[in-house]
Length: 151
Image (tube, rainbow, N blue to C red; front, side, top):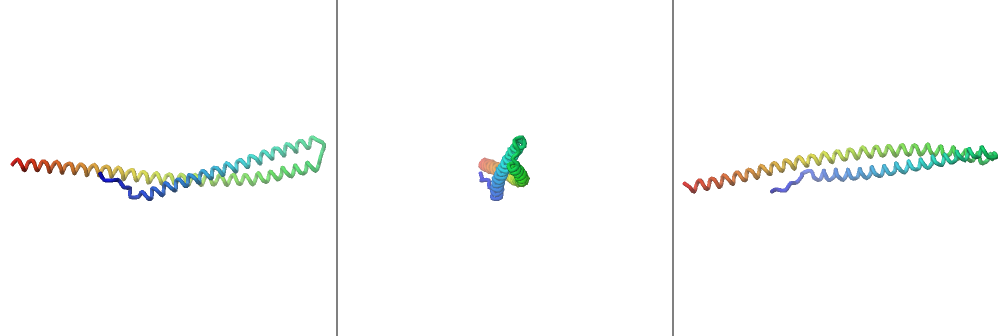
């Protein structure tokens, strides 16, 4: 039996590598998003702590210097939270782009795998037809030899 060789195997190999690369990029983007979301959560926790400290300061003997520093810290952390929210938004966008590239790479690989499968099926059918033809020729040859020797 002849050996099946997919003539576009090199393209399929490239598509598989591109898909693998896209999976890695997607994982990296997801990890970066988780990191940015964690930073945002820590900033919000710090904001809550500063705001709680500010409430405590208003209930205690009024230390205006400490109140000012804590109010400044609350405003500072609010600005940092806004910046971090932008970082999270950008990280989400990067995840979405990486997901799209991964989806596209997977679709391209699957398309080439389907082509390979179809070519393999055609190859099997051609092989079966070739073998059937060889068998028919062999039977005809033997039948012709037996008919010729009888007469």
